[in-house]
Image (tube, rainbow, N blue to C red; front, side, top):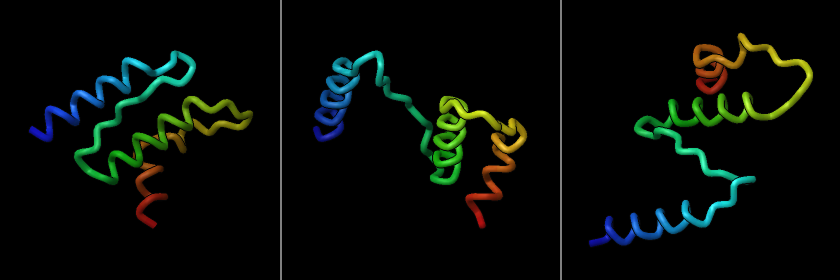
Length: 67
């Protein structure tokens, strides 16, 4: 079955991932939410000096993406 083969390869990828470059699983049932979650995760992880925490919220990101 194709799904079983996909799962086998997916698990092999996760087993061989290095700690310094971990995978992040993002729920992707809806494209917009998946993109917002990815952007939010990256913004929280990347160090930069001026970080407006109000901008790093779903409402703000949703308005940016939907423009």
